[in-house]
Image (cartoon, rainbow, N blue to C red):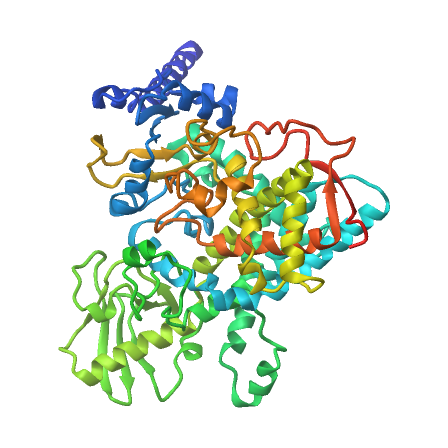
Length: 629
C-alpha cells in the first residue's frame, strides 16, 4: 500500500475531525444575536474563554459588568456555552425565587462516581428528594450536636496562634484558617480527629487536599471538551485523583457500616450507646439517622425552600442515583418471620415469590421504562443475583390485585430492603461536597475577616467589646453565637468585599420571560455577585471595610438581593448555618485573647490570585496580647 496514500488519508481524517470539532464548539455562538441581547463577540471554538483566561474570572466579570452597565442583561460565550448574565436585581430575585421552578438546576460538570451525586450536581426531582433528606442534618438540633467538634478545633487554633504570638512570628491567615477548617470538616463531617497544623502528612489531610487541588483542572477540561465529561477515564486520563477518591469512598463506606451497626443496637448494647461509646455526632452519623427520621423539626429551610420542596412527613425513597450496588446475600437482608424468598429466576427477568405472615404475593421485573403500574413500588429496589440493586424506572408489578394486607407487606418488604441496603453513593456524594464546599468557603471568609479586622483596629475593638459583653471569659457556646449582631455585620461586610461565591448560575428548563427578557430553554444564566458587591451605585466607597453598612437601618435602604454571599431561594447554600457557626466560634475564641495587627510582612492592598478567591501575596499578620485582658 502506498505510504503517501495512508498519510493523506490520516491528514484528511484529522482535518475532518478538527472541522467537526470547530463546528460543534461554535454551534451556539449566534444565539444572543438572535435574541437581541448585547453580548461579547465570540471567537470560533473558544468563544470568549481566552479573554476570561487572560484577565482571570474576577477582572473579566468586572470589566463586562461595567461595559454593559446600561443593560439589564448581557451575554458571553464560555467556549461552546452561551451564558446570560443578569445585572438586574429584580430579575435575580425572580429567577432565584418567584420563577424557581423554571431554574431548578445549576450548571454541572458530569464527573464519575461518587462526584456525580453531590448535592450541587444533581437535578430536578432527584435534587429535591436529596435536598429534603439532607437539609435536616443542618437543623438547630443537629448543629448543637456537632458543636463540640467545632469548639475543640477552635481551641487547637488558639493554641497555635498563641505559640506564634509568644515567638513574635507572623502568620499567614489563609493557611491557618484552612488548617482549622480541615480539622472541623474531619471531625464534624467524618468523625476523624486531626491537627492539620502539626500533622500535615496525615493521610486524611493529604488526600483531601489532592481532591480539592484537582477542581481547577476539572473545570478547564470541561470547558474545552464538554462532550467528554464523564468519559476521561475511558481514554486513561484521570481528572480527579483516583487514589484520593478511593480513599474517601472506602473510608466513608467502612464508617457508615460501623455506624449502622449501632444505629439500632440490641438490648444488651443500649447502655453502651447511651453512654456515647459507639455513636458520634458528626455529619456521617446524622446522614445515617436521616434515613429513618422524618423532617418535621427541620428549621434549616427558608419559607421559599420549604414551599418549593413541598415538605411533608413522608419522603420519597432514594433512587438508584443515590444508592450503591450492595452485594449482600439475601439471607442477611431478609429475616423471618417478616419475609422469606421462595423462588428467584434470573434467566427470564426476575420473578420473586415472597412469603410473609399475611400471605404470598409475587413481584416481577418488567421491561425498562414500563408505565407506572403501582405507586406502592415506585422507584424501589429489585433483586438480582442475590444482590439489592437500585432501579431508576418503575419496573415492578404486583401480579395479582393487592389486598390491604398485601399492600402492607409490600411496604414492609421495601422498608426492610431500604434499611438493609447501602446508601453509599448517595452518602459518599454528600460527604464529599461537605468537604469541597466547606473547606474553601469557611477558610476564605475567616481569613479575609481577620485580615480586615487587623487592617481596621477600631472595628476589631468594637467586635471584641461585643465578645466580652456576651461571653466574658467563658468559651463560646452554640446559644451565645446566635446573638452577635456586630460580628454578623463584620462577616457580611467581609463577604461583600470577598464573596465565597463570586458567581452563581442556573439552567433554564423552559422558555420563560423574566423582566421583559425572553430566556430560552437550556440557557445558562449567571449572577455576577462579585461585581454587584462592589458596584459603586449600590455601595458608597465599596473598597472600604465598613460593617455599619449592615446595620438594620442601612440594610433596609438597599435591595435585598444586592448582597448574596451564599445565594438565595430554594437552592441556596445548604450548609450556610454551619459555615457561619464555625467562623463565629473561631473568631470569638481568637479575639477573646489576642489582637490581629498588620506587620512588616503585610501586603496592601490585597491582590487576588488569578483564578481563586485568595490573596496573591498572602494575608500576613501578627497576633499580640489584648493589653492584659
